[in-house]
Structure formats: structure tokens, C-alpha cells
Amino acid sequence: MFRSIRRIFWTLFAVLVAWCAWSLYSHQMPWQKNLPHEHRLTVLTYNTRAMMIGESLASKHAMLNHLNRLDADIVCLQEVLVYKTGERLTLPALREAMRKYPYTYYDFKKYNSHRQFGNVVFSRFPLINKQTIRYESNSNISSQCDIVINNDTIRLIVNHLESFGFEKKDFNIDSLTAGNFKESSLNRKLTQASQLRRKQVMKVRRAIHQSPYPVIAVGDFNALPLSLVYWTMNMGLRDCFAESSFGRYGATYRRKGIGIRIDYIFCSRSLHPLACRVGEKRYSDHYPVIATIGWE
Image (tube, rainbow, N blue to C red; front, side, top):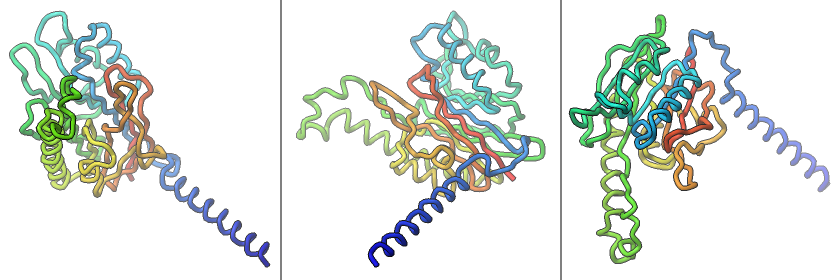
């Protein structure tokens, strides 16, 4: 009797495991969607850390060459820093390095008369209806445009939300004692950045809600997958990495041996995340994220 019950239990357990595996397979695997090539788009997002500020011009071009080799249809860059003249990276030099892409969107906030900083999009497809989503922050913006792919239009929103802006002095041990933490610069920056990000992500959500087209929202959100910012973005959208890469925690940013996921590619429910991966090579403190997205 006991053996029969045990046999039934393990049989049902095996069926349950097989059903769960098939559900995961059919829901997430790229080959489940037999979509034509013209209904697929590869999108790359990458925070360049101010175009590898402090590194040589040769290193900057090595990074751009690497991005070209990844061969995405749409390349979305954040923290792009270019100079007007001189031996540093200029806008004409950036254009030349990425010349394989005929369509571009430069969304810069001027730092001063010598340099510009912001988001850049390189595309194989026409980009129209370009618009900036502005924030209170001095160095953060979101950039919106529409990608025209044959008879289809997809709205793209490239985001760079508020970072904490930590400095080494913020981690002074004397300021982090129980009595001093509330007044410390570390606590102040944590609080201010979190408040600003919440306001910024609501502006992004408003833009998504107002879009007449399916949306792809990418970029450096400076927020972990368990954060309010992440769940605000994920409502009604698909996290391409979580839905097509068997996981929710692939590190996109690494510093001092610690890796976290703060860069994302989201898409509308009407779009299908067919594949998504985090690049293995990084030139800045971030890794590129590349997703293939399809539609019916």
C-alpha cells in the first residue's frame, strides 16, 4: 500500500516537473515564435561611463568598435560625453566610428561651451518624433523617438535615471556610526537619489501610457530588480532578460568585485522578447545588454 502511494506520488511529481519545464520552455524560448526576419529587432543598451572618461582615445575607439561588432539594429548609449574640439572624442569622430548606422538621435545636455553630455541612439531604421523627457537633475534625461520599420512603428525610450553619486568620503567610518548616519552625506545621497528616481520613473510611465505605439524602454535605471522603480517599470511591460534568459539577476554593473543588475530592456506586452543577454566584455563600469524582440 505504502509503495503504491509513493509510486503515485513520484509519478505525479515527475509529471508536474515536466509540465513546469515545458511551460518555461514554451513561454521563454526564442524558437517558440516563428516570426519573419522583418518582424524582429535587436536592441542594445549601454552606459558608457561618460565615454570612458579618463581613458585614452584609443580605448574609446576600441569600445566603439566592440559595439559595432555586436551588430545590433538599434544602439542606445547613455552618458555619452563628447567635446567640440581637441584630441578628445568629438561628435564628428563618434559619427564616423558608428557610420554603419544611417540614422541617429543625439540628445545632449550642454555641460559648457566645450563639451556635451547625454543619450545617443544609432539605428538601421528611420527615427522620427524625437523628444526629450527632462528632469530636475543636472545630468539625467530620457530620450524618446519612434522607430519606423517598414509598415510598423515602435516607440523607443532611452533612460538614464538618477545615480547616487557616491564618493569615497561618503563611506567615512566615523560618519556611519549609529548616531551620525542620519546626518551623513551617504544617507543624504541615498534619500535624494531615491526621491528623484521615483519622480523620473513616473514621467517615463506617463510617456509609455501616452504612446500610440508599442514601446521599448531601455537604459540605466540605477535600480535593482527588487526596487520600486523596477516594479513601476515592469507593470504592464515585459522585462526582456527575465522572460528570455532564465533569470532576473544577471549583473550589468560591476564595481570592486560586486555585480548588480541596474540596466534593463523592457517592452510592451504586444511585443515578444525572443532572446536577451548581458555582454561578456565591458569597457566602462557597465556591461551592454542586447535583446532580440519580435512582433506579430
